[in-house]
Image (cartoon, rainbow, N blue to C red):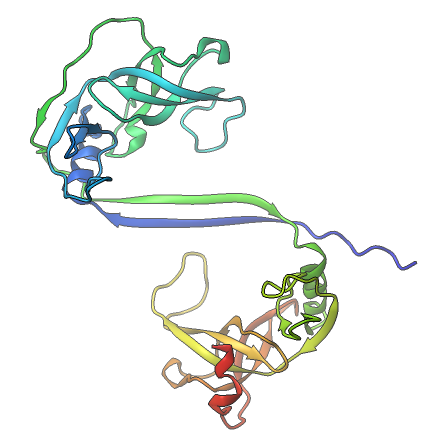
Length: 317
């Protein structure tokens, strides 16, 4: 019997810094945290929502009536986190808690600094612990901590006015995991290392999927027949990229396209090079230019052939 193929695994990080501007409600909330003030917003039915939202979740009406709350509250539910990850609020084991601040009708998610799960319970009283340095972010709340006091601050109106308000934020989204491609995509990657592109044909609809998925998403049947496609193909549609991505050594503007390789049943993604960006067009015939290590197509360039007729690729748009 031939040896079993090597199981491929690789670390994968998906990261995106999301930049957004803030409306008056979110601006007031985050600026308030910087100033050690917790603000909620009153909904049409009288409930106080924390964190505040700009539109009523029931009526969709615009909300603007801000309410200042106290810094104590009650745990409504919780879960113990025995192994904190990088970037989480605390470096030692802690509880994730939903806390209904006094005067609020909804709960705020944050960390509770507690010695162990036996010290946490639904209904326990807690108070907010501020971060030493505050910038106008949810991390201005360092965490919650157990609290035995009885003082309860009544909610009161707040006009949302602060000096130098926070008007925008950058939210860093990041996901770290280990990717294992499975049988079908392992074969695809191994073929790429030989400068070949291989898909799999559905035995029912006969469509050739590239990259292969191991099953036809339309018919729901397994795919095992390997079909070599390309290497040439046709640009079906494309976009011009004008924003330079972090850590990507490609000058803008450049073109990113859907390319239907000859023999494939659907288009894959690829960058177009070797031609001015404003001369790329639907129907352009292209071929791969392989990376320096020969493991994958770095980009696709024009072949010099006449453009493909629209009817030959219209079903692949």
